[in-house]
Length: 135
Image (cartoon, rainbow, N blue to C red; front, side, top):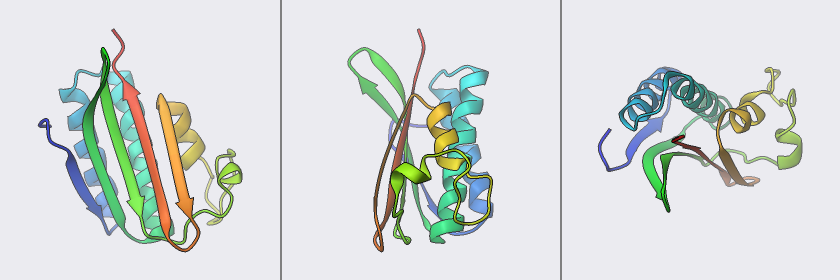
């Protein structure tokens, strides 16, 4: 991955595999160890799948970040789907409106160091996750 952000339009189920590949390459390039690479890839896979299943299409942007002396990766997932009516409920393990396991959002939060989510019903959802390199 270069210093510039990597973008992926999410339009089909195969884009989940592409997202995993891009994020794996980025995390490895940035120096994350195998365990953290696996965590980052798993979270990206879940959030990409959420876009595909719930919104139909969207965008993933993966980029290196720096905050003071900390370095890491930030991945943003945006869609113009139906939005999430109750964010607190959506963050509960096991909650799903599509009869899935309901682990996408809460699982991603557990796997990453930071997760921010904003959603407007009828307008879409944005999820930003970050993982910091450990020194």
